[in-house]
Image 1: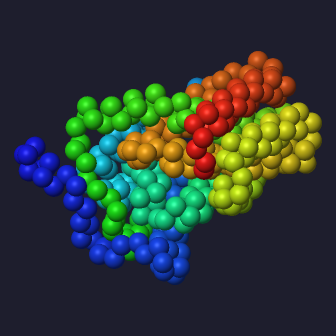
Image 2: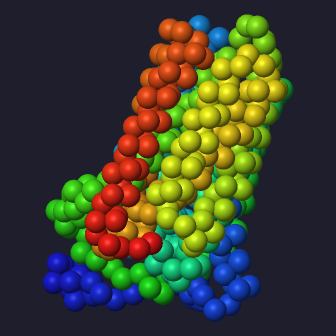
Image 3: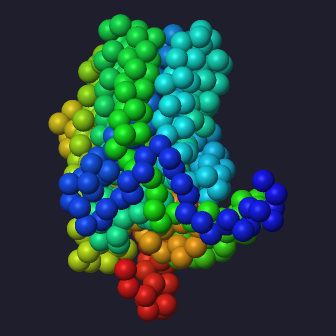
Length: 419
């Protein structure tokens, strides 16, 4: 298509012939179906992303490598995911969000099966990196789809449910990977996950309808880079992105370190049993949903402070060398982290007045880059001082989050905008 002909059609709605009925915001039954379709798409994406996290101690032992080295099995997926989010979001501005989401969902089981041929640690890391690229498609544009197709009130409630699915997917993928991987081998776990992924991709195809409110834009890389730079030079957006990145850097990697702590002395628990700690994510599923209600009644920035303080208290509680205390600590860490994430994520989506997909993608770039880099930071603390060193290093980052939130709130009050 020539540039001229494309520009003539630059403001026409996308016609997705695979599903003709758009979202009906006045039909509760239809909204429930669409929301659940988006929910399970998020669920399976995060199942695939975190499948190998509970297996890191076993992989480290098998290949005789350090915790920092084996962390690349998890970090490779989250890092390539973070780097792929913006390109996927940019491309979605041309062809629509739904097509990107469906491609991502169908690609993940294919890549998952390719992992079966990874008989060396380097190949396993490379395969996981490819998985991150595939998963980035759905994760980068799903919230933009909701922001465009749902009414503002429905969106605030739906995004909480969507992020709750992130939590539930993280729980299921990790527990499934730990239990099945230890009992039947990681290859069997990968095959089962690929079959489930394909089934859910089909359901999302049937339940998530075509877009009514999406308008195509010129896909000039220069224009999209300008949009990205605009977001990064908007303090109200960039500060929220930094908060999301630091929050995730702490949250996901505190679990990784806790896994190494529990399989080692003096606890010496089996990997399958240790993977059950991810049941604590259920708290995050609940608090993600509550975040939508919080946003309707209170300031999001006050909620971010609350979530951060709860997570900090949880991390410090884990200083008590007792399994019950650690269980309570992880519940607090999860609940606070997902509450913070939901509010910061929704903040970026609602405050971005242009190129929403690019804005949400940039938030997730910070989020998952933080998750990748935070692992090496906290594992270094763990290897050089145990959990007390982790608590000290983590506290510094939590203080930074609180300082950024204070600045974000100050900017919001100065502009005089309301949520």
